[in-house]
Length: 318
Image (cartoon, rainbow, N blue to C red; front, side):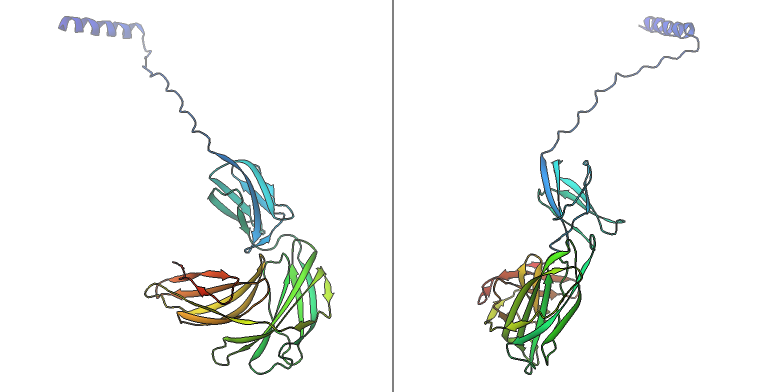
């Protein structure tokens, strides 16, 4: 055996000597390239770019990784086809130097938010007089709130008329998307407790709608308050230990982009009763926040069209 090993060594040395300075390397056979992962399911994404919660935004650049960018249309909508899920969407904000990035989306109908205003801003001025209800000058502890709303505007404004005469004026009501829109003006009058400022009953409600265009000056938009029923919104709120209730707010949702701030005040009571107006077509939205010393919990809004109701136990998100 030793003799055979010596012969093999001599053969190897002889080969190396014959090759001079050349060096031979043993190279492993190349491995097979890994197979690409299978493609995931694909969908068509029909999304909408919005500002705030509901206002559509046209002309906003939207990108989904792996696809060419598109621009939202006049209704804020955009379409991507053959999109693998989950996907990542990018919305370029109106200031053009920032973007909102959504990672891991699976919906075929996402609403993607941007900020600010897109395109030109249109303005109008409106004035008129409120009458009826409990009358003007307003009786003691009564007050009237005006809610002008222009379709497709991101935020609303509210304000009172003159408590002595009922006259009102709103300057520079702003909106975007289209120079032609529609103004809805609502007025709500109520009597309020002089100590708690909670509503006692409602004494009048009025609404008018009229076309509006950029730079319009709408004069003589008068509202006559008609009687409106008052109903008690009652219920009980249960919160985790150590999370006392702080306050209460009540809104009426009139449409996807219009809501009325009816009342807001401090209230720590768990059983509660809030007087609310029975506004035709309105959905009541009640919010009760609770807070601990170290964190905050918001009880999710409860929406009901019926007024005299008992609310279920509220859910709490921490």
